[in-house]
Length: 174
Image (cartoon, rainbow, N blue to C red; front, side, top):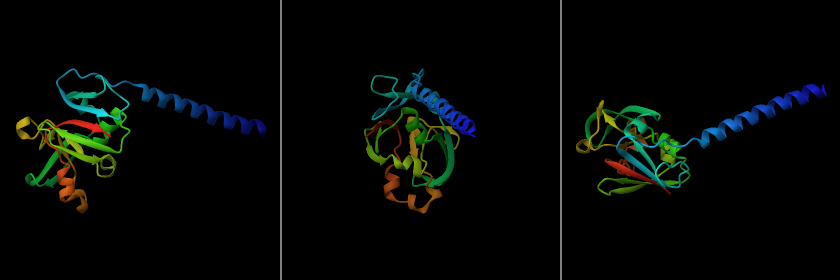
């Protein structure tokens, strides 16, 4: 009986050791460098960097993350529109974000602070496409932070509308 218990504990310890090693290996992976034009730069309290103190992403890198899509109404569109792009939480996970807030900065230097919790509680995306069309500077791109407003009535207010940064260029994790 003692041997069986020891064997059982031994297997559990071995499984935990293997899992710990796998997780450590996953955390040790480095963020690839962008091969195309940089679309997004993330700085601040991050663990993964690929350009000095920043994590830079080109369009292909963003498209390789967990891309989500949803249709929602918004103050900027007359009817419900489909938004698609990487989930904000996927970007934060990719850079190993460790902060509590995000300073979202647009190309025109508009900035707003967004709680990190929004990424997990409300599942916004950094939309690269609206209605299937890739965003350009002229159409509020290349990235447009968007919440799924129709998923919850509490999202339909000026607080969340103000967090929808178009022409998003930088995120500072604080």
